[in-house]
Amino acid sequence: MASGSSQSLKRRVQVERETGPVTQALTISIDAMGGDHGPAVVVPGVALALTRLQGRPVRFLLHGDAARIEAELARHPAVRPVVEIRHTDLVIAGDVKPAQALRRGKGSSLWNAVEAIRKGEADAALSAGNTGALMAISKLILRMAGDLDRPAIVASWPTLRGVTAVLDVGANIASDAAQLVEFAIMGEAFHRAVHGKPDARPTVGLLNVGSEDMKGHEEVREAHRLLREAGLDLDYRGFVEGDDISKGTVDVIVTDGFTGNVALKTAEGMARFFAAEMRAAFTGDLMSKLGALIASRALKAMKARLDPSSVNGGPLLGLKGVVVKSHGGADAAGFANAIKVAVDLAASDYATHTARNMQRLGDALRNLGPEASQSDSAMAERAS
Image 1 (tube, rainbow, N blue to C red):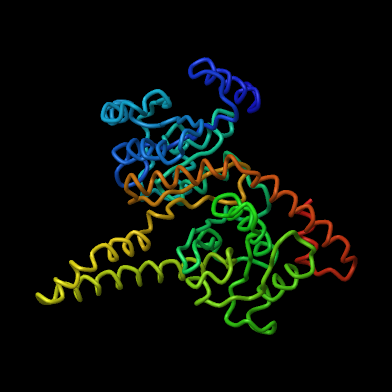
Image 2: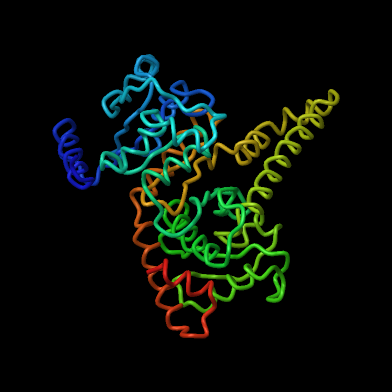
């Protein structure tokens, strides 16, 4: 088998033959069968993404049932020139356990989408399918860049000030100080690549039960110390509390997967509760309905702001490659947003920026000398 770099070169030469000279063309490998809707959402999502990408040179590998994919492409003929179909009959169901997916998933649409990165055929992979299976298969095929148990899942959270990246939101239930610092490094690089502004550095906070230095458990306090003293290229602002997430107090909030997942599910539940209460309030009587009609434009704007699809696309950070998880129930607009996240991350210097900070972290911890804690020493070793 040819190496990843030679495969990538061949792919770029083929792109130039088909479409003319292209600089830095990206290929996104997609599990077309994943999620609740499969090709019925994936193909329209690709069509919408092409419009939003505004001419950026991107091609797509769609893995799955060729007949179903072709049927959708017939409805979106403008997409056909930038799509290559990779047929497979195998699909990993949403209820399959990760261990079972590893044993039986080879050759499936999800597996093949990720493997295209390892082969050098794609710059990023995207799936709306089984989250546990995607994490397990991605870790097996691509390996971890650090020493995390599993990739960290980052959520892009709508806030009063824009979008805050929150991680981990479910992959690593318990995280030590070393992992929390790694989350900070990866989350900052992600926000810089996908949501950041050219002239602004993302700010970083560590989620805790209070802002005072003595608050929180030992791992959180140790991570706080390291983030302040390790000399990283991070704009670290210290501890933040739960209400700071929706305020947008900082651009990146770091926590363990247990806390992050509880916070995420609570926010989703509150959004549904709020939407239901709004519907009830505006449909109670004739005057309420009239008020809803008058305020319809503002209500639609608010609904769009709270819609999860507006920030859909959660990368699995920590892998040796870009893998993005889309919400399983996303519509075409939501899937298009996930595609844009994959494109932005693949086109950025995310990996270089992360590696640079990990090297600085390792150097700083080694300079702590014999007084360094066991956690510090372990992190220094894996940061090298």
